[in-house]
Length: 150
Image (cartoon, rainbow, N blue to C red; front, side, top):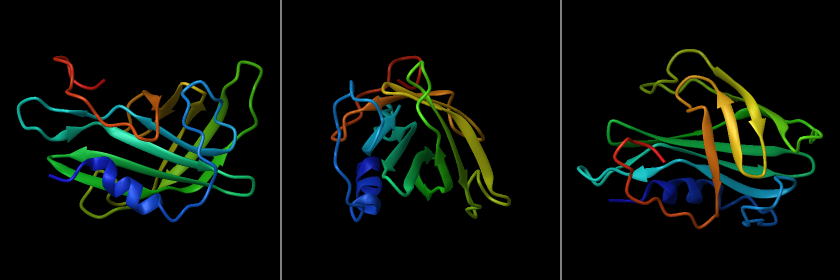
């Protein structure tokens, strides 16, 4: 079975940006991964989601990957906006997932908003959990805890 982050990496491999992979670095400029993916003990399949952000001086790119019913889904966000860093170290983040036929995003575009920090993204919107921790770029999901996602 193909690892869910392989497709995410393949899609974003063409993006050239400095890589900042230390979990203590602020999300200023570079490539950042936020993921709560884990491997289900019973099925061996991945569950959860991942956001990969390329934050560059003139443009931001974000891909969102999630697993649904054993399938890996991938979307490239549009209208990605990251605001200036506030005094508490967080920045506002907003993005849109375009309609994707046959997924939970079928029909109309879905808008998401929240905050992003050096350790996590807190986001609200259809299908995305409230808090997704920042991971190293070479993150490999481990077995899910007994209560579900990491």
